[in-house]
Length: 152
Image (tube, rainbow, N blue to C red; front, top):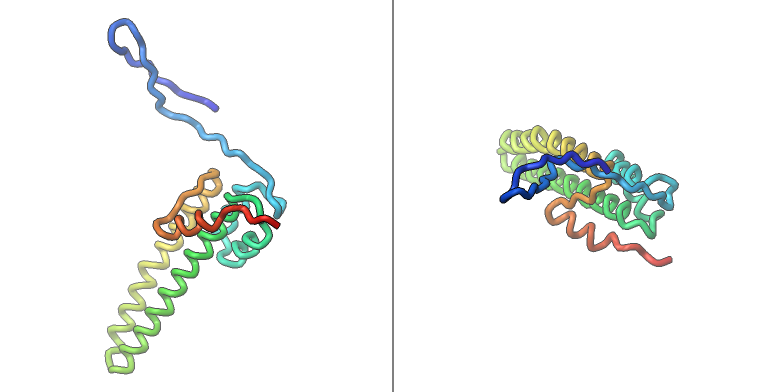
């Protein structure tokens, strides 16, 4: 672990140290799937939800991998449900002769949600790679609650 410290004059003759930058060390533990935990965690977001489901069933003891797998599954399911809901809403508007408005709403959702989901996934991949359990609002709390290791 490396520390870059800046010495600032304190009160009187004493000097105080202020940490400017601290490099994090990622602890890489092997998992039941044969990968380091940070790699398994990031793969949960790369191929959702298939890899995440596989890791969830195979990994019984590693809370880090289970957390990222569950969060990935819930995030993917949420986006899927929103997409289906907006498609149904667009179909209803189409039936009542307002299909154009439904198309605009649905298209607008994908214009905004597609890139947002992509950048969120990239951010979560980075966090998992760094060994962090970054919790999304609501989804992260659920994932943390259910990621406790399971006894065989």
